[in-house]
Image (cartoon, rainbow, N blue to C red; front, side, top):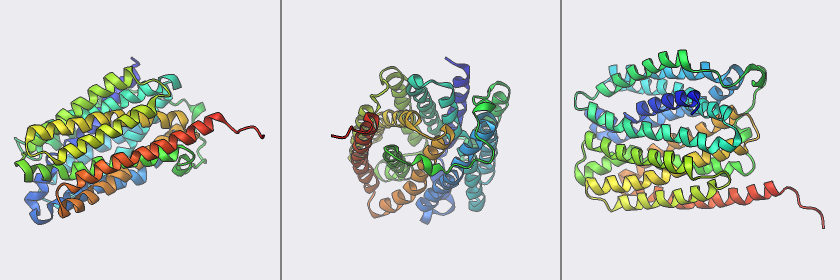
Length: 393
């Protein structure tokens, strides 16, 4: 395996450990400060992080098209480390907690969207799905270990997970500074005066894939912001137990992405696997509604994890293969759509949860089924575009 891919896989995994480490811990932190509005503070912090990433990730992608991927990725990793250090120091002070989430969102787009472009740079089209499978596996591994680490370290203090995340990111920056090589040579970079809107990528058949990706992230973000409250209500889940639930989900997802997506999914077959993933995800959501015990909730969340692990790398691979703009712009829009889902998902999830605790799960399941229509529309238009203009009768 290319050492460059191994390096960026490690960077991605670390970033998503840092992102997901907060999932089992933040609800307890905000509940200790403002118990009456804890659900909304939790959703607001998740959304703020993603709002800033949504605004800036296409800019990071465009910047990486101009100056190269390496300096942007390194900047993002270092900023990520600082943001988690600030969060660890801000416990008990809501304004500082919000500020640290803003800082984390500022630098997250510099890592995630640009690494997708980095992998696209160094993999030929016929290996693109495999490369994106490795990207997805890295994200899945981050989500695998992050909640478990967060839940386990919360036994020492609720702040400990953030200090550990900051230290890991700082060490990773030092390692990447000496080992990460540039993937975009100067002759392939965009001119400094060229400005390409991220929305130029939102065209043709691909726009339906971007909306589908938004649906998937919107559903996941809504569950991330409400499932712990659901677990507290149904079976009195603790941060450590909730972390283990997501550990199992992430582990299953990483196995699927590393084993199935890399080895089984062939170029051109991605839509079929996306459809399967949407149906499996919907099943997981609907089954979670029936859960009243920790073990069943863990099992059903893992079923959802299988579906999600099939969807994401296949969607990303199709976008990088079909895009007609720069990889940085395309991946920047992909990251922006992901962030848009994470902006709106937590708030809608919190509102639905206040109405009825199972509503976030029911709505997420319904959206997964509805996304099949978007996939069908993409496939129809994509086949028509591949066929080219029909000769006149």
